[in-house]
Length: 474
Image (cartoon, rainbow, N blue to C red):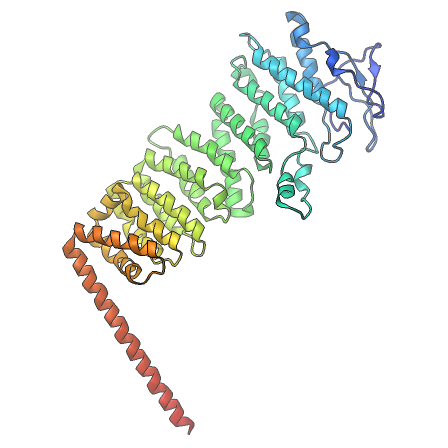
């Protein structure tokens, strides 16, 4: 069923009628025929009445006729079908549109060195908008929850049934944006803020194929249209703010961050204040969301890009990670430790010294974790030469903080691999600064003895209280 048709072409007396009731035959696509359509009145779920003109292939007309024919084909591609509700209806018409889409994509790819005129850019953006933004059925499929069944059926529920057409529309948009024949000065009138905003809204698609195309197209637009760059960054910030503070749900966060990673990589030095605020107000708080595993790899890349560009930001980032450090989620703790090691590799001594005390306390907690993978990952930090060097320069402050956790691991941790790694770390620390190591060991033993004495004292106090209570009861 047609739900929207943009662009009107005049009727010709010789035109044949079909698609009126779904029973007439569509023109044979193998005979190099295309259709162009004009909207007519329709009621409820009835099909629109359409008139059809036979259009030749673009390759079969003269150069002077190509542009006008190309425009007609773009208007034809504005016809929108409901793939979710009526997948088996108008199959021939859908195939005609698909073939036409393929032809216009090929035309953009194979066009020569001549610039696309403004009418072409205008009609191209109208066609894209009709299929991606103005289609009332485009997001309808997302609201359908798959019935209880096997996992494969539920995964298929997130795939857009209209993808055979949408993929070619996205390919067309990508080719238009990336084409050297597209004049940026003309295109920015049609690929404007409204167009970009609607494109960014589509990132919430549940179909990963669609998000992949959107990511590539957005990156091209950002690189091609400098005038849109501040708007794109601001809009992405707002979407991420909403995700962090309000909804906690969005399908395209990983793709957003992948685009942002490339944008951050291109930031000039010194970094602007707005970029630093983006790091502290958006990227760091993104670590607190439950769905962090869905986008942690891309988020970590963005954060490390900032630290590598300006090492003075390392202190801010590390303190931010400590603020949102997971308490009961071991898999997230491992992610944090992985990211922390990469950040520490880009951290200089001065920045490390500003955050080493709270950081050492957190590492000590990880070392004491009963989850062997968390303890193991924390112990692996000493295998990193740069991290080990940072610790060695501040061993008098760090070692007393982490030593109790290391000593307890070596003697009482249930996992043998953790015990072995702990022994290796203790040996390295002992060889590096034997005097400090012995001092920490004595302090640990004293604290252990004091703890035992207090335990006995408390036990004796409770025993006396019980005797007093018992005597009073008599």
